[in-house]
Amino acid sequence: MTTTQLPLRGIIPPMVTPLIDNDTLDKVGVERLVEHMIAGGIHGLFALGTTGEAPSLSYDIRYQLVELSCKIVNGRIPVLVGITDTSISESLALAEHAARCGAAAVVSAPPYYFAPAQQELIEYYTELADALPLPLYLYNMPSHVKVIFEPQTVRTLSEHPNVAGLKDSSSNMVYFNSLVHIMHDKPEFSLLVGPEELTAECVLLGGHGGVNGGANIFPELYVELYNAALACDIVRVRELQARVMEISTTLYKIGKYGSSFLKGVKCSLSLMGICSDFAAAPFRKFRAEERAKVREILERLGAEIKNP
Image (tube, rainbow, N blue to C red; front, top):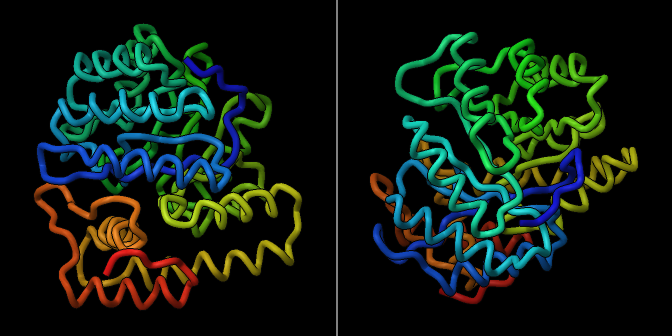
């Protein structure tokens, strides 16, 4: 297991899951992708998150991905593993597997069928954290799970010795700043942000980094943006933020899909010769016309195209 210095900081990409089909991991693609991101300077890796299509994957594929990712990383950076599930037993089983494989921590969003109340969240995560073999990062994802970790709930759970931080994907800066404020006396508790458009702002205001999907494609860009924000280099932050927004407003907006972001990232990686762009059911990869648009955007952004 990789030892993680607290608080966890920097750019920790939510890795896409390279697939050949619904039941077959693109193992060569996983290795290329991991090495591509590590070469770009990332500070950690998050497998089986939203960008990793975790809820759409079979348990067999999830277990394979964790084992292979940890083997490729080989302790060079911390590996975080998503264990979000509607069954606490399945979450614990995957966490045990992640620990055996050498992961550094696990990440969990609330169970996503019946929306729990705040007290139920406290009780659930206390039970989970008590039993986990690895540190736990809470995952605030209200658009997908119908419930938010209220700031006081986060504060209460932070008192548990096995709860190490939170990733916020709410896109709500008032909420994130409330967390920074309420957690100001616990500097070892990591506050990370999902939406890459907000990463620099969050770091400037006291957050610890970003779990940014675009770092699958352009890891150097997001690492440089984080470093500029950490150094309070506002001029450089503005330059890099403009590039991040160019990616966000073009590459992630192709077609009228809720999955446009995911398809844009996977298609980009395919065009760059890194991994397959197969998307797990119920989604489908971009078709020829959409793929041509992605290629045009990537060329404008200066990416190296290796596949037609």
